[in-house]
Amino acid sequence: MAEQRGDMRDAGDVREGEGAPDGVREEEARAWDALVATARRTVADGLVVGTSGNVSVRIGETVLVTPSGVPYDRLSPADLTAVDLDGRQVRGTLVPTSELPMHLAVYRHTDALAVVHTHAVHATAVSTLVTELPLIHYMAAALGGPVRVAPYATYGTEELAGNMLRALDGRSGCLLQNHGTLTYGTTLDQAYDRTAQLEWMCRLWLTASSVPNLTPTLLSEDQLNEVAERLRGYGQRR
Image (tube, rainbow, N blue to C red; front, side, top):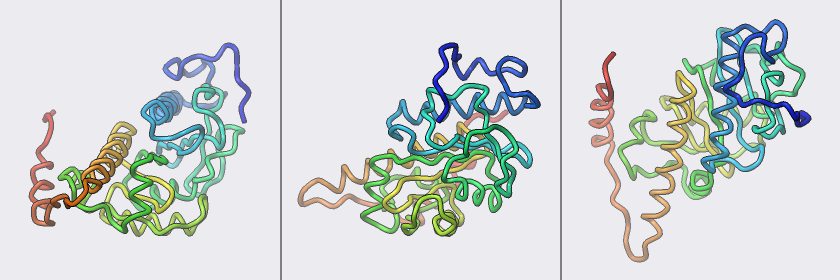
């Protein structure tokens, strides 16, 4: 675990030559800045407790990852940790997250540039109840369709990474049985937003299904597909 530094700066202070390890490119320093900010956000928003969960971002053939067992508020520019796509450490001295196999599997098999893994309470609860999140809300379309639950396997194993990949097929997020969530995107903001949306949908379903003597209405696959088409034109055009 990294020692707490008395002169620690905010993650936003990362700049090449100003606390970043020797040999770190400016692009990597900026990416580490954003990664640390996202990791801290997962704690602030209640998606993880302590050092649970992890975040990564890909730059070319290099993957920057949160280190194992280090509280996010203690991470500084000097703690930058990175591996190649084979898992060999190429930056830093801290041990990478124990969930590295999941992160690398996503980067090898998708167009992801960022991955967020959390132990969000409502999503984890849902993962213990169903094999697929019921279609309680149309925002499931933003994740590619009905969100699947990857069967349980011990954390940090290739078995878990394989289960996750199968659950992710055609999706940008999934639940991990008795474990948590994993989402990816082309940016850290997108990956994080998908995590937050998934947790919200799980909370919504748990809330609606807990009302005695009533069963929540669910969307059909056709209704979800219609939303998916509309979402392709959503937002501002640049």
